[in-house]
Image (cartoon, rainbow, N blue to C red; front, top):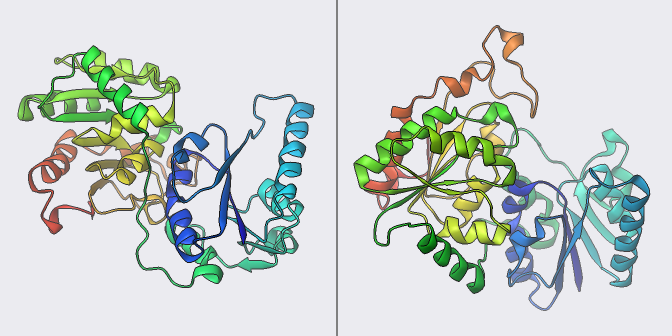
Length: 357
């Protein structure tokens, strides 16, 4: 049997699909299980023993249209040559729905998108409540025709030995002390409305450094350089700044060595949960039913206002007479410290983890 999974979406979404590959491989141990993801997120899945091949597709934001079409055609040609029996389209967008059909697979599973004119592209359209159910639960619903009901579905990421060694070398080169708590702050976010103010991250870092004699690591991707520098500049204690990483695998290796991860609700937050790192998620306009951490070593700090959640990448504050980012601005440093203390001091107590405040 040959199975193809289409998971063409952003970083955090790809992390949230990771239970699917393990479940499919467990149900069909001799099957080929391949995946298509958006570039560069295939790096997140490298080393996953449940996957046989990882294909990357460029969604074409920065490519000339003709180059994008040419790349898409080559990919579809390669997929057709694999003669897949089944395709599971986890996000069921227009591009992936058409790709599923063009693979030639006899069984094509995806969301029931008949109301949007794409239902005919799947042989098995599955009803999904996009905004009312956690994203992981939605994906488990899609693979139910193949595997039945699944009770346990933890996230997982696999970090290579080369990246683990490189992470330790970086820690040593940048003066991270061995044997002391490592507290990581991730102040970036793809959507500015989900960012807790940088000055509050800075205040949090100083408080945690004082309280735990901890080394504070400020982490971000290339696009987060400005906000990471703002946090570092605002701290009394000089943090260790990591915002020039060469790969997502290296970021995962660094995160896996943290004692605590404090982040806006963004992709690396889901990476930390998948890596079993105690995590505080600071959440404002995000739909927590859909995007809360999926695990059991986390605390969520949020301000659930009557107008929450906002439609993704839309600002509804002005429509209800509130200042922009009101739900983030109302979250205090003290609340986040309390959540962090809970994880650091009592992580083995069931009441201390998996909480939403």
